Image 1 (cartoon, rainbow, N blue to C red):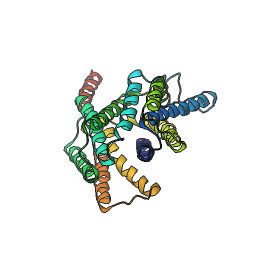
Image 2: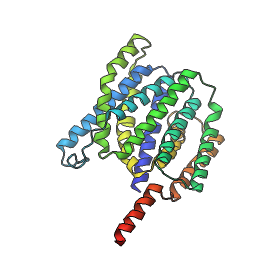
Image 3: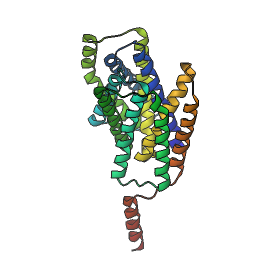
Image 4: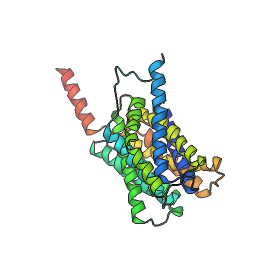
Length: 304
């Protein structure tokens, strides 16, 4: 139950991120470089305040004595690459093309890693995954156009980076602290982003600043901390598949907050995706080769 709750909250945060980014960039409220810089900076500030409050509060969300986890440079670099490439790619990509490329890259990265680490899927799970993927393609394909090479490569890079960031979160001991330090490290590169943004294509007004800060502090900072809580409770393949729900949640949010129309195509595709993801998660995963070997070894030791 805990895994479901944290995963659902994280997916809502991801959808909110897509919505905020789309509103900011599509309406020209801010350019991609400044949006990314403010997103990461506001995320770092928000998480810093939370850590400071936690250190002075009797309610310890993270026990640093038993769970010291200061993130890593690799995770931080993955975070920066994901955020920047995502924003730059969406300058030229439409929503459908961007989502198709991004989530395809995420799926291939995380499921590929799971298979390499011997996370075996049952036939039913493979069928459920294919149904969810087909539903996702059915939903996004009509709005997708053939993308230019550079934006497509940027979005693919963003998806791979996010997959890597998620994979590294599976070993996380202290989600809030690890996410905070990953954001803190990202601040070192932000002056470069601001310089490039103001020197070339700077677009900046109060709406753009507000949207970037909301994306950074709430949807990214707090949202990614929740995702890092959920990840150790999920297998890599499960964490990959559930993210196919994000476009569905984003579309529903668009209908609620932007008065976008939910078409019959969306309803059909959503039923396919959500139903298939539910089947994938509920079906018992076959025991991995590593787990089987460990269980056999433990049984042999016990019999001695």
